[in-house]
Image (cartoon, rainbow, N blue to C red; front, side):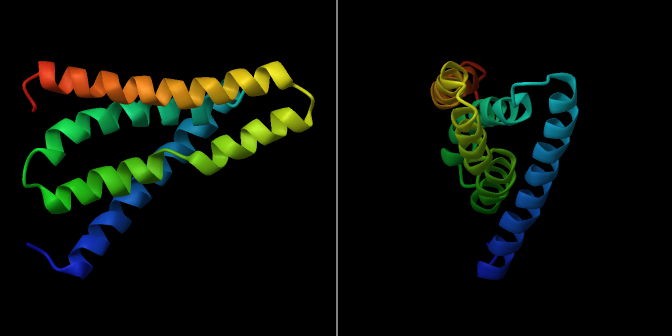
Length: 128
């Protein structure tokens, strides 16, 4: 089992992969959908789904460093609470109260639902 430096490298490498994925999804999706920050919503929902799968697949096995790479690194770098918060605040500052409420509820409840779906799918697929 790797030491603290190996674990730190796994988290850092995974975070770089996740952040680049988030950036790419944001650039691609936001260019195609104006008025609503779809890129952040997409990564947070997909990240929730993948985190649910990872919870079953990696948490219930002895994949310590892989778990750190995937869950803390890749998925932690891929999903983003700070961008979601900034987007919701921007909508509120524009006076778009309904859009801000929809944005906030969709992120929070949607990511939770996607994580639960990921757990169900992983267990149904025999990963747990």
